[in-house]
Length: 150
Ligand SMILES: [Cu+2]
Image 1 (tube, rainbow, N blue to C red):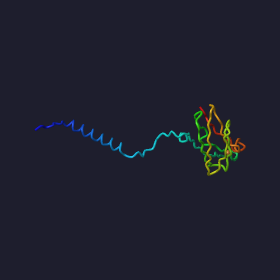
Image 2: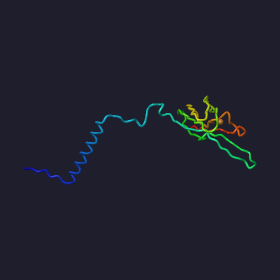
Image 3: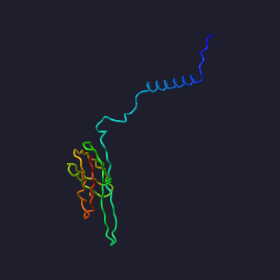
Image 4: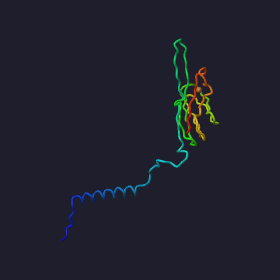
């Protein structure tokens, strides 16, 4: 009668190999219900930037109230040639009709609502997001945001 003599190390190695093969088989046989982490869909690759309308309020020493509306964040960075979606939520201020300098993008942000615009910049530079109603200090501005494209 012949015996196969296994060393303790060999047994452990065999068990590890068996477990790995079993896990591999299970992984291979399971139905494919995974989700891609990177989508080739152009729309999914679009950069989305969320903004809100905010307000700074203060009082000067002589009791005069000063108030400024703002875009928040007030400076955003985007890639040249890449489509960007701006989602702007109206929080402070009743209404902010705006446009983006150097583009034909315009819209109106209303309190409690989200305004979505899509924009693409083909030239590097700094573009201003300007609120028509609040352009200067006299009109509770400057409500100007900066879009840095590079
Ligand atoms: Cu405004």
